[in-house]
Length: 356
Image (cartoon, rainbow, N blue to C red; front, side):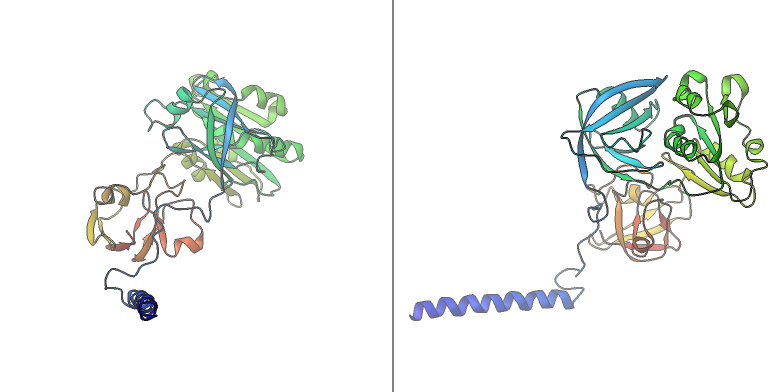
């Protein structure tokens, strides 16, 4: 009996000591280590839709340098519903994550359709799609998500450049089916490089559509296309940054502008500032023409990131101190209170403290 009593007393003492240690850690931010919550560190499971494994069941070339993929579920279940303007995150075999607009029919719950142009001097995502995704390949997607929804409006003007037609195409179909007042200005380098010209030609009367091939007619005159737009007209634009800048400058008063970007915009420039990495106890300097991610990676080599454009959210980190200059298009207002995407966002002041 004495031996049993000794074991019981020792076990009870150990439990009490463990509880006391936990209370001590919670009370003190300095002993034995910073009493911080678990870092965000790129985890987005609470907000990201569940990943899906899909099969590439079709592959076509709707234009020079463009590949269209048809993705279907591995079982007979319906795919998640989506609306015009939605996109998915495509997880490539290398682990890279890229965002592609859904350009098929939202009523088709069995197939997702997306298209990508090969960017020769890009960061490798489009080349991986073109070279490695063929019929029979399994892929992972996350989503759909929609940051570019088609809103109710008395009239629409759609402006697309090149592969920027992909999110716009389902909008055209929806506007036409609803009997809405709409028109499209669609530009590209040459007609052979512009996907879905045939589909657009079959969709509506010619007077609704203006096709501008640069090798034939130069750049689209967006100012002329927007002139006379009635008050309340919703203007949707997706394409190269210069095209979106031109549409922004020419937007008539009383019209609303909606844009979609899947490529870097203006460089993330600003004043230099310091970032303290609270967990590692180190401080790095972010130069005026650099990013927090680039400054942090030498100190935290395993930091999570993917798109480097503020779209995917993989690099989201908790901010403990400092004013954040948010430059992403993803975080909610609540998330912006205490976190940032370190691939694009910066500091308003001279210092930030990250939970890293």
